[in-house]
Image (cartoon, rainbow over all chains, first blue to last red; front, side):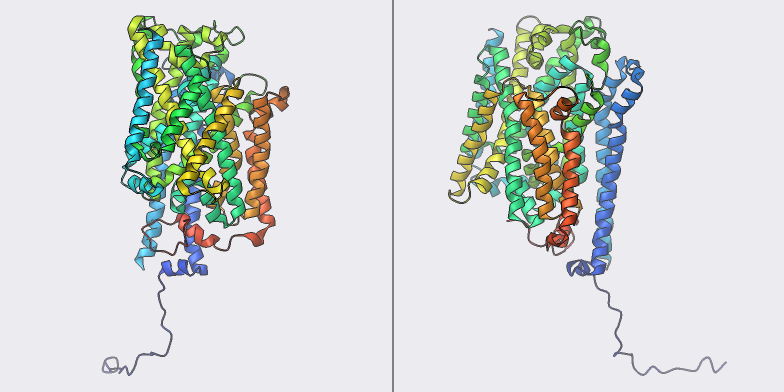
Length: 123
Length: 509
C-alpha cells in the first residue's frame, strides 16, 4: 500500500483567492444590506406576530362577551358562585385573564429578543 | 363633628400633604433631566405604583361606581377597557416607545417621520386630549366637595386647579414618583377599608343580591341591570364602540406616554407595564362593588341624579354614627388624591407640549413651562364650569374615543409599519380627529340627533378609529416617495434590544 501512503507536498495556500469572510450580522444591519434587512424584519415580524396573537386572544375572549350575550341572552340568568355570569366575567374574571395574557406576552417577547441577540453575538 | 367637618379635614389633609411633598421635591429637581435620571433608579414596583396613581382618575374612583349603580353591568366595560388598554399598550407600544428615546408624543412623531408638520399636529392633539381629560377631573372635584360639604359645585374644581397649579409652577409634583405611588395606595385603601365594614353589614343583612331588586328605576328592572350590553336600541354597536375607544385610547393619553421614559430600557418598560396591569386589576375590583351595594342601600341617588357620589355617601349611609362619617371622609380623601394625581400628571404633560410646540422659543425654558401650565389648567377649568351637564365618566369616554382615533394609529403604524409617510400620518390624524372631534363637540353641546345618528355621535370610536387607520394607510401608500429617509434606522432603534451594539441613528434631543 505504498501508493496511498505517498506524501503530497503542499507548496503554498491559495492566498490570492478570496476567502469566505464572515461579516458580523450587526455590521450587516448597520450597513443596511439585504441580509441586514432580513435580520431586522425577522425580529420585527416575530414580535408583531406575537403582539397580534395576544390581541386576538383579547378580542376573542373579552371582545366576544357582548356578542355571546347578544346571541344567547339567557346566559345572563346563569349564576357562578351566586353571582350573575356577566357580572362574574366583567367584574372579576377579566382582570386575571388580562394579567395572564400580559405575562405570557412579556415572556415570549423577551425570548424573541434573546434569540435575536444570540444570532448577533454568535458570530 | 359632622360628616362635612370630617370631609373638610380629610380633604385639607390630602391637599396639605400633596403641597408639602411637592415643596420638598422642589429642592431636588430643578431641571427635567433631574427627574429622568432619578427615575432610572426607581424599581419597577414603585414606578408601576406611580403610573397607577397617576392613571386612576376621578372617572375610575367615582364614575365607575356611579355608572354601575345607575346603568348596571354594561358599565363594567369602562374599567375592563381601561385595564385592557394597558394590555394593548404593553403588546404594541411599551418597549418600542421607550427605545425611541422620546419624552413626549410629538418628539416621537418628529423623530419617526422626520417632519415638523406631524410634530405640530400631534402637539395640538395632545393638548386637546389633555384638556378633554382634565375637564372631568375638575368637574368630579366640584361634585365630590359639593356632595360631602354642601358647597357650590364650582369650588372643588377651583381648589384642585389651584393646588395643581401651585405645585406645577413651583416645580414639585412631577419630580416625585413617591407622591404618585403613595396616591395609588391611598386610593386603594380608601376604597378597600370601608368596603370591609360594608361587606360585613351586607352579609349580616342576609346578603341580598343587588340584581334581585328593581326598585331603582321601573324602566330598568334587575334583569336589564345584569345584562353586559348597553341598554337602548343600538346596544351592540354602543358596547363595541366603548370597547374600541378604551382598548385603543389608553396609549394616546398624554400623561401615560410620558411615563415610559422613566424606565431604564425597553424590557423594563414591558415589566413595569405588566406590573401596572396587576395594580389596575386589583383596584378595579372595588368600585363596582360600591355600585352594587349602592343599589341596595342608596337607590335614591339614581332618581336625584347624584349616582356619581355613591362612593362618597355609601359608608355614612351603611354605618351609623362617627364610624360611617370617618369612612366617608376617607373615601372623600381618596377621591381628592385621584383628582390631584391625575390632574398634575396631565397638566405637566400638556404644559410641556404647550411651552415647547405652541409658544415657540420666545420665552425661556422655565418661564414658558410655567405660562404653559397656567393655560393648561385654566382652559379645562373654564370648560368644566360651562359644561356641567356632562357626566364625569362620559367626558372621559369621549377623551378616549378622540385619542383612539388620532394618536393610536400614529403610534401603532409608526412603530410597526415602515412605509408610513408624514402626509399619511397627517391625513389620518385630521380625518380621525375631525370626525371624532365633531362627534365629541356635538355630544358636549347636546345637539346630537336621535336614533342611529345619535348613537354614532355619542360613541364614535367604532367608526372613526377604522376610518383613521384606513386613511393613514391609503394616504401613505399614495405617497411612497415621502417615506422618511432614515425609516430603516429608526426601526432598528425601536425594535432591537439595547444590549446589542448597533447603529441606531440619532434619538430625539
